[in-house]
Image (cartoon, rainbow, N blue to C red; front, side):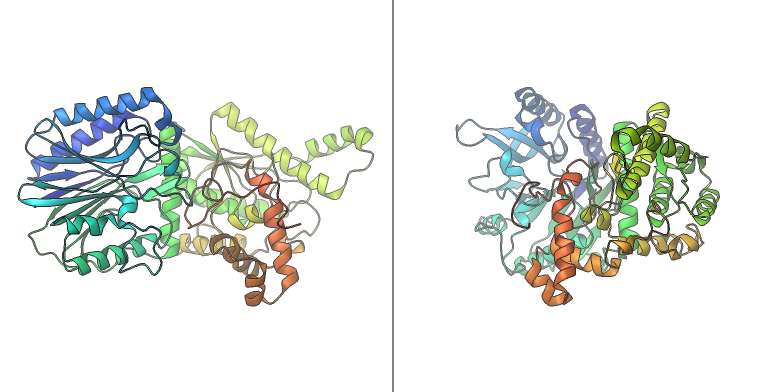
Length: 544
């Protein structure tokens, strides 16, 4: 069977836009001689639709659009993802479904069986699981159609399975001859390789070809990398879609293809591309034409500025330099070098007069100004400048805090946390340096002086980050274990060996939760990002 995989970038809730994408792809598939044209999970509504699903008017509009798409089909089959409803009066009565259409109507519907409820997934809130799976005979083949999570429970691959049911094995038992999985699988580094290994094992074991069609795009903080995959019955990867871009892939299950060995590049390249794509998508879908960055002379704001230029073009990036009496001369000159290297516009506006006047006006009320108060005041005045420029010029303000800082609360609410999108808030400080060096591989874009200098917020004389934080290589080791591996203090101290430092870091993470709840959405590139995927109580007594 000749399959056409349409790796598209839907917009959540924009049914007309998504419908056109599906019909255009279907037409392209027909012209290419495909027997069956396949689109990703929930491609008609966008993923994840969240509480839009709870609106009756939205569900009715989805049903109408789905039938309009079906009415345009001919003998060539079309599979796309949508929400459907039943009326058994148990649960939500709503399903995440794959619709197979041909000859002018919806001929077959397969609901998603395994409904994920972990990390960024909250589908149990909205969808009922399928009670049974079926194969559908079409053009001499028995199609085994599944949806995303349904294929992530293979007993031959996983040491510990998340679910008791295995929909793929059920499809095999019912005689499936081709496996089709439509997916919306959020990106994190390493997941693509794990996906390849898992799907390869499944196909090799079950001796069936597989077409895995994944969406691409970014929906607020979630990035979808595409990279749709086709495997032959020997488990060899023979087709792979573009990463971070739409694609159209033809896969004939009767043909022999050369095996594709590699599907993932280096950490630095992958994450840089993901962040660029996430920012570009956010601006495109929310119609922001230009972005703004507060450029401090430090590595974090330098990296965010480079990402912004790659995503938006130099002509659409503006930076503000906002020195104070504590800013080193190098911070300004290094920033100006970066500005010249990137060819971007800037303003240099000192915050010191406003800081001095604010302290003067506050003295009668506060009597004495604590050092931390003055430090936070500087950050907030910078935030004030940035938001004023953003409001006046219509630029999207990007925050520049990294994951290490966000974890331990080394950021100021309403100051350097002010902004609409946190570009590198899921990138540890040690990884910030790796990506910066990757950017400089061919020529020096980020001045080496910025990379080499000791990290400092420059909010008081001779300040460095290590005045209050452990060295970043140690801090990041602890944070990875705590945040991504769910280890607790006893497990971490056995590895680190210093209980005092471990307890200090964990307390800082826990007590900073209230800040993160007020933070801008963070582009997700790891397996456990702050935000929707990590839900930790602000008020708690586990760690005192």
